[in-house]
Image 1 (tube, rainbow, N blue to C red):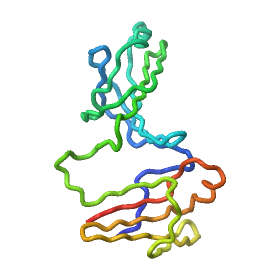
Image 2 (cartoon, one colour):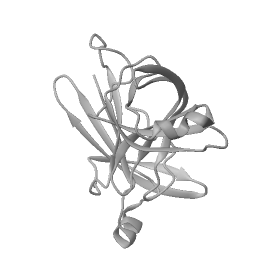
Image 3 (tube, helix red, strand yellow):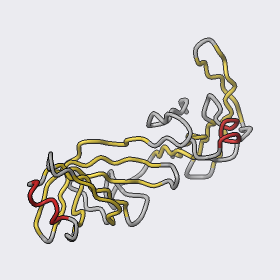
Length: 189
């Protein structure tokens, strides 16, 4: 298997990241349809979770009426996601309304459908214990060579590989606490 790399640029301890931006979305506000733009973020601190941030423009005269409105997320990029509203903010000057939703269940199936056949999955582990690996490889960062443990588990149908993140975040996690990406893994047929 090729060396694994994180699918996203995790910048450090307790740092969340934007997974995707500028997705079209539809809200229901008091049973009326409203379009907007959504950003999906992975928030890791203080509680790891997916957040859906929706922005749309409203008539500044009607923004105060949104305070007690029933607001539901109908779809993001054409996909229905069951989510609950956690926060709403607005500007009466610009008319920009920002609403944050959290999915009712995770993981959120974003790609494919019930008929999709999975042949390879890449996953990220946060705060997972340091491993010695079943084998090692060398990763070069700048002018420095790092020994990178690889753990490989095999079954009849699947192979699971797990690699420690280099440079190693464990010392900083021990000193500061919090959440950080510690491993990238994949399983494949």
